[in-house]
Length: 377
Image (cartoon, rainbow, N blue to C red; front, side):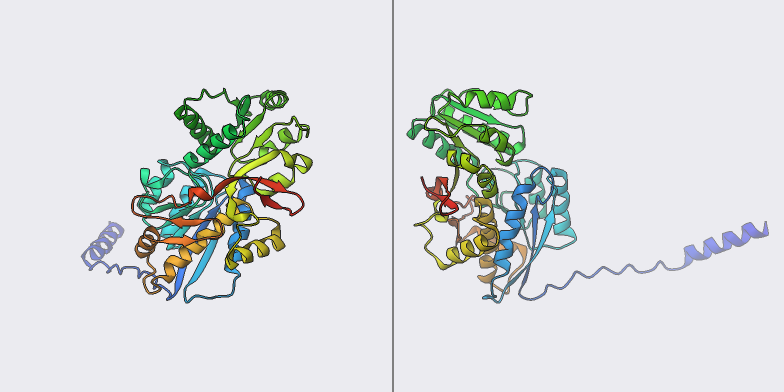
């Protein structure tokens, strides 16, 4: 009884004491002239081939001699080809790293969970892979697309096939990855809008898919492969190079290494990109410096790599417009109301349009083996 009474006395004494005052955790003080940028890339996993070239291009940007009072502090994050991890790392960038802007270099779906998360995050998010006009769904006020939209890519693909008279017969093929499905859906919608009956696509995810593509390629005038091009190397290398060989259309997600690894079959392929990366359209010193530096380090840059370089340019220029107002809200407003000259195109945004690529700069490219660089046909 004495022990119980003693315990009760201690509890009562604790209850009568004033509770400790909880002091708020002070927010970190912003470092003057510094913009914190988190870059979310696939550096491992099934989508990994596109992540490293984008990081390499951004490193070229970061290695330039400083010419601005504003500095970008960039953190590269591997989302490992996982959509769940992409959401997790976006939250970490906002909550823990207190990023002022985020660059996302992985395929996403418009209207999906990621753009819903962007709406909650409420900081500028620069997208380097094709996505539908961000302003058409949630998160659009804070998301800015630098790549052509799937609708733009589908339009130029259909036009090239029809204008070159290689549409009939054509073979459509792809796997079931989200990027492949999105490209295929946009292209079929474009054909239906032109009152053209589309052929039935072949799924390379099926057990006989690759063999069906090889067989069909012997009589098709064109082969259209949707999604990242790396998985299609063996299929393309099985197509004999001849005057009767089909024209092989690859995706905007094509990496330069995917083309050069095809060896002699690289002469068969074409893919959508910016004419600004081809001889005759390189007119600014910024373009020349980027292309030469990247080529010296890694070979000719892909469209994704060059677009990633431009992502840092957009953030850097927006910050430079008002170097004393570097918070996320002001950065978003300055991106939305300005145009930016990149190495790929002139990006232009406004409150109704957050897809900034200039459609007139989009063209189908071929590989120039002598120059070891993409070129116009």
